[in-house]
Image (cartoon, rainbow, N blue to C red; front, side, top):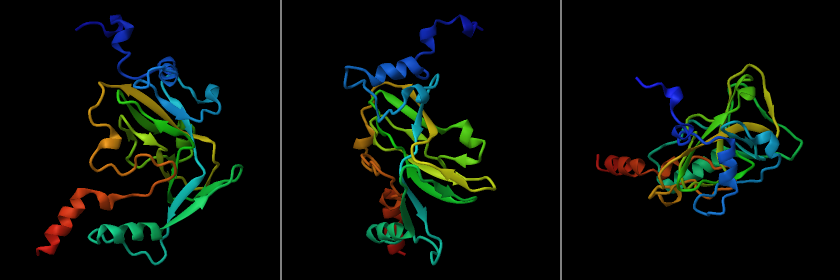
Length: 223
């Protein structure tokens, strides 16, 4: 078996971008290669060895529990869209004020930064260990970012600790890393069932737009 330590450094360069490669992508004169993350308020604080820290935005969405028994997945899409909207409280926090996430509570939020991923990069959104040690989860399952994504990234915040957490807009709660890929022919914003592209604020679930539910409703109507 060959000694992997003897492989040239460029063997590893296609695995994950380091801080210099991220910076080069941010400053690339080639629009097809350029990565956009704005605003970068304090780059010296946000760059890591293979990632870039992202900050918490100012808008949160919290699902009301009072009088909500369930969401009927078989309702028509327009009714479900209204039901989801009616079930969510939108909370806007001023700079310098905290949003309090209580134990066991779930809330949607978004990055302060607007992100545009070129067609030859994929990305992964992860939490920072500083917040993980306090019991904050920053995404439930949706940590992957497709090539071609444009918009604010959504946080699926959950507090699994025993004490409330104060979350201030502008604080770095997440990090994003990047993986080179061959240019995709199917950018995220051109997928047939894209639901969240171009959003610059927190976006609630649009599950009712998935084609599976149309087929399920059709099947149910035949029974």
